[in-house]
Image (cartoon, rainbow, N blue to C red; front, side, top):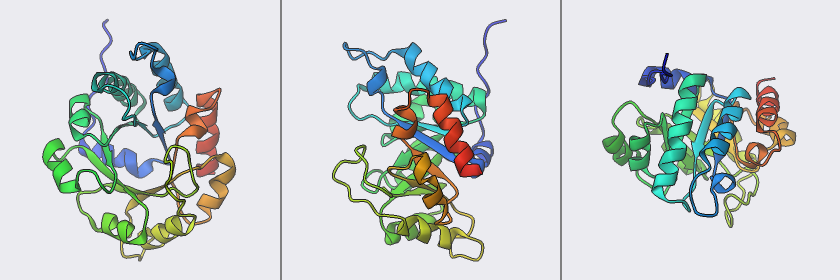
Amino acid sequence: MPHRPAALATRAERARRLAGARLYVCTDLSRHVRDDGALDAGAFAAFAAACFRGGVDALQVRDKRVEVGVELEALAIVVELAREHGALSAANDRADVALLAGADVFHAGQDDLTSTQARRVLGPEVLLGRSCRTEEQVRGAAADPELDYFCTGPVWETPTKPGRAAVGLALPRFAAEITAPGGEAAGRVFFAIGGIDEDRVPAVLGTGAERIVVVRAVTGADDPEAAARSLRAAVTG
């Protein structure tokens, strides 16, 4: 029989997967783009599949340097593999790309589309996320009914965000306090991000955060599947 991709997840299913997510990986495409600028689709698919086998709950393609066609090709791979593994696919910055790719999640920074603008482009089914660097931004994201989650960071300085000062552990601690039962934003989903690796997971968990976003800890690993598995075990205990 011909291969049939898994059915598109509903918003409710996407929200359920997000609520259970603990490990979110962002990747650029630098390791998987050939000298002629084309995507090495086989290598990238192998990497993405390894991530999902290792327990990655959400995989985001984030690369402003590649052509849109390359980004769409990579996202198509992630979307299909995420469906097969019951995980989430994510696009960054460009709502049109997220829409065309059929991504589960659209993530934006503070200076990108507002949640209302993104929702107008993407409709009601796609989950929306926002990056936050200050307590004011966290409060704003937590109070935004259009947002499904937010990220706090960078906790530590990271070369993926050159020139951006680390916010330290205080911001995820604040987010954990306001999203805890009885807090002003009880039940809201957030992730700590920025320079996190397996050795730093205990410090992050010590703030009350339950979810992490990583980049190099998985994308730079010789064995992405093993790295993801170890990170997820560290987060979930």
